[in-house]
Amino acid sequence: MKPTPDSHLGAFLRARRAQLTPQECGLPDTGSARRVAGLRREEVARLAAISVDYYIRLEQGRVRASAPVLTTLVRALRLDDDQTQYLYQVAGHSSAVPRRRRPVQRIRPPMRRLLDQLTEAPALVLGRRLDILAWNPAAIALYTDFPALRPRCRNYVNLLFTDPVVRAMHLDWEHDARDAVAALRSEAAADPDDPELARLVGELSVKEPDFRTWWAEHHVSGAGYGTKRYRHPLVGDLTLDCDTWAGPEGSGQRLMVLTAEPGSPSHDALRILASWTTEVRGDAQHMEDMSP
Image (cartoon, rainbow, N blue to C red; front, side, top):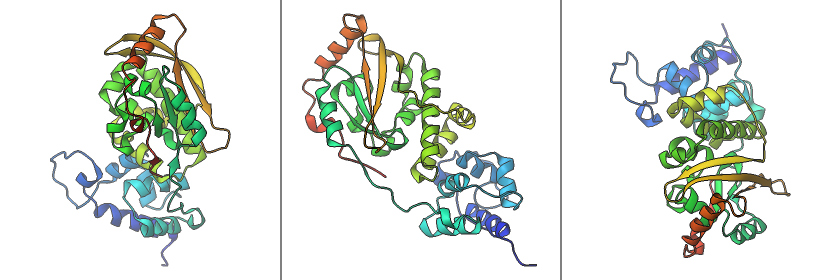
């Protein structure tokens, strides 16, 4: 009998997961003996943020993989460009093979100038996947030392879930984290084949049960304003208005600014934070480039 495309897909998935180890995929070592080499089906499903039953049916050729699912499998199975092209071909999506490279994210000069002129209000420039492309000294004082973070860790959703200091300062963490996941869902709809988005979702799905649950709920949000409550270790509690403005040129870059009512305790706290950042070097305020 002539092999079907689905059987080719299943054979490739089985072969590829047999070539990987839990350690190189960032999975914990359970210490239990493995009857066969490589990853288990449930481990691949976790990495790809899909159900185990769905993944099993993929390997058995009983369901056709969608392009978004293939994107998550590319990251979960650590496929190179040639393997990615083959995966899409055997899955019947050869015309939807993701681009090999996306343009480097560069902050627009007008956005940079606006950011530099905000001295008391913490401000961030967010790009694709809610990557943090730039910041001002007040944002460093409020959140964290952004220049000290590795570039791939400079992501708003990632910090909310994995940075214990940033997470603890959000008094309404669950509400804020759910909103961030919903915003990331909107990003996925705009660019479902983004491999860096697949990497981010896969890693957070493995590490954070709350993220995995909320991502599966498929809530989306494009809200550009709201209120955030923080408990800062140095200036105490703050209640800040959070407003986000999108760039007019369609780059996807957004300016997020946090402000407080003049004369309020939160406004005074922001002024104190700003006074501590006056000597922050300009070259530490923002980065030049961001990975694709």
